[in-house]
Image (tube, rainbow, N blue to C red):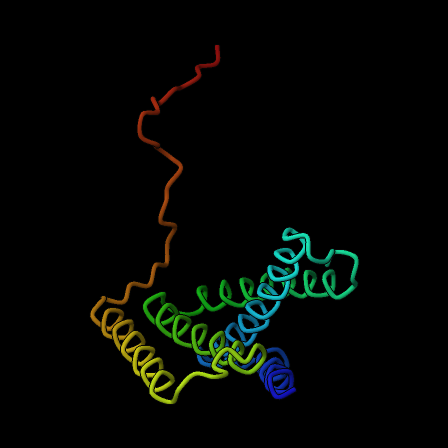
Length: 171
């Protein structure tokens, strides 16, 4: 419920108020990513159960609902990520997207599928430290790269390697 409310507020800011801030766009991508992760796990679990032969999951409407949610959330996640890539530099987008995507997927799994159920506090803390180290590493690597904003087309189709220039003469 919180995720849907946050998504609605951010969509309002993004679409109606025309707020094109990198954090807002990346949170939208991360929220969609968490829905994608939940639906992919649900669909794959149902397919696994069907293939094991224990119970035919494809006869239940929830399978098709989750499949549609999976495709839709993935498509919109890519749409928002592409829009962000057009507005901001990749050295800004990639680390923020990595951190937000990973955090949202982990939190979604913890809350929806109770993935940390029965795990000791030490293991949870070690997992958190591992995530923080990974996030720090990504930001340090991205920070060291120079920012390049390309205003022109990167690939020119005028002269391709191995292509001979041909000219047609009209008489």
